[in-house]
Image (cartoon, rainbow, N blue to C red; front, side):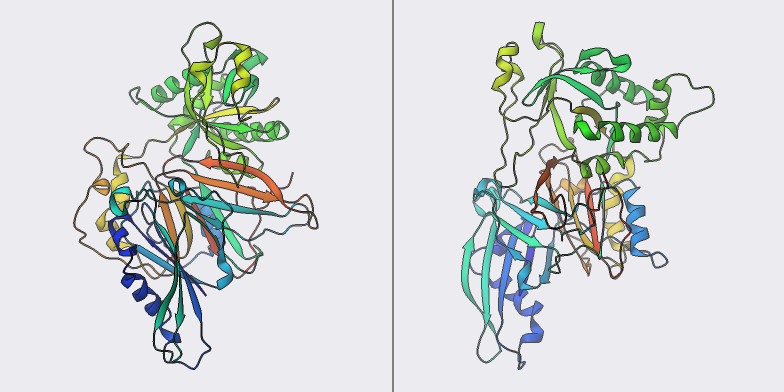
Length: 489
């Protein structure tokens, strides 16, 4: 059998060599095996230090799980930054999957593998890679993850440690049935669109030079983005402020469909006398509804990739208006990141020095901006809220991102301040991780049920407060066109 134990940095030293904490977990989790006549068992325990843990997601009594997951996909994330604590779950032995990722302790991660979604056309499978916490100051190593094996003694009274191994990567199969006919999932990415998808003209590696704008006129890559950011803050009545932008790189075949999706979202904000597109964008940015939040999940399911905009604008001559994107891992076996290459660009000849083809000919690009957390966001993870949450109606797996504690605002949230805990909450039937680094989503698929699988899309999703929720249920979920479910093309 297989057991996963996750702790936050405050409890990282519990995973060090004495093993007393892990031993207590094993004996508590498998207490029914003690003093029983069951056959001898071996328990494999994966222990890791992660940044934070989410609270259990409360289910409503009068709605089905599918209805609640669908509603969750249309809502804004709660902007909570998670909690210190301990989480564990027990799974069948087959859920432990050796990872093919690089064995670098500097980039430790756990791969959470969803079951294969079988469909008449193109079966697919999603893998969410969640980075571990930095534990240099807690354990002396960049990340901390330990794989141990325990066996029950011949008298059935105690488990004994037989093997211990420090590792950097491991995989977890979220369901050992191998088929996703009984899972329902939803993804929230709190990024609001700033522009329509624009056809890229002139790009190499992670650098974009020009795009085709309105009326099929070419413009520098940063021109519309810079203008839209200013209009965004003005429309929302906010003072201009430092921000980060993200770019959705859309494959050529999906450009038309995803552009139409953006148009449909904007059309919901149309008024009778509207004649200009900027009025629709202003109302979208001002509206409290979040009808835009299906754009990114739907695009990812169709092969698009999300990239943080590293730098752009400024410069002289051929460097003017360039945009540099954070590159995507080129494969699930060997993630590669490049430094920002904008400063070394000296004309078309140097364009070829960019190593990873982030944008290809015919691709489109659409820009997004993070939604500012409301003033009451701190209450979402406050102690009073935690005390009020029902602990018996939580369910499912949840992965997400939180802002880095290094980048937190001056005089930041109490959630980023060391303090003595004043409340302990226990949530059953739920398990999850919140990471300060980005989640990496990799989708593998086959062109037909009998064909071999190949990597269809790999994307880093590092927008703060992103959440992915997946629940195993008994009945057949309704397919939707978002990440985690089937997409007809």
